[in-house]
Amino acid sequence: MSKFKNWVYTRNPFTRPLKASFTRARKIVLGHTDKLEKFISAPELNTVYQRIVTLSKTYEETYSLWQGAIASRVKCTEDLTNRLNELGSILIDNWDIRIQLHRPRHTSNYKELMRGGRREFQKMGIGDRIARVKTLSIQLKSYSNLSDLQEEVEDFYKLLRDLRVEQQKWEVEVRTLSDILQGLVPQLAKALYMNLSHLMLLYPESPNKIVQFFDMDLIRIKGKTNDSTFFALEQEEEIEDESIGFPIEESENEELVMEEGEDIFSG
Image (cartoon, rainbow, N blue to C red; front, side):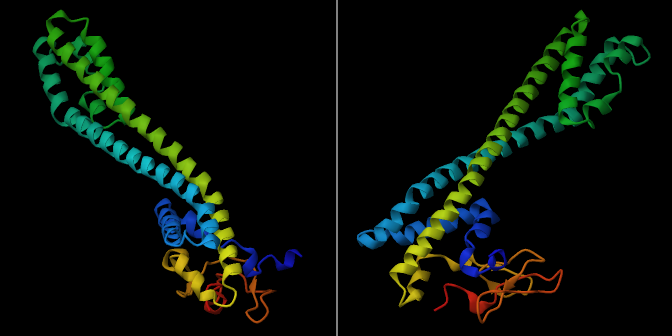
């Protein structure tokens, strides 16, 4: 039976479009749900609607949280980047000059405080630059005549530290919500496939009516042939003989794509 694995009707046509992107998946699911909602007064379609509506709401809520987390991460990243730019272009020059007023460049104290020069505050990675500011603030505590500078450096370190913590918090939140969205995809694909089957049972004599419940522009996938197909198969896989719906051999390294005539939504 394995040789018939590529029969078009045994493959879920929603899996690949849903996996393409979270935004595309959202549009497919919400579009399908909204189209069904117009017919919930009809008992036979209300069943189809109820199968997808809870999953659709869960996906939409998670998607909104994911978008918000991305926006917060971007904002924190911008704030941190701006502060690090300020450190590298303005502050370190100011700090260096103020240190030299009390500890000239040729002294061992200056070399200890500014080991590596200004470059360590300008060119290293984010974590390393923040750590370097912290180290300087600790070292300055040993010099009473630099106490004002020490407080300024310490305050700036705490600002960088807090921004970095906030940024990393949102990075974790984005990854967590991404994992949840990815986990919902198989459930959504299954529900959509079941709805498709249900609608085919309802409209066996007029299958074109099924199309009104789906956004075909989002579900269709472009293959290498540039034909708009329902979905493209992986390379080196078998495809159906259009005349009987069973597999035939295809040459190696050629994109395997369903023909337009095999679109199960065509009338």
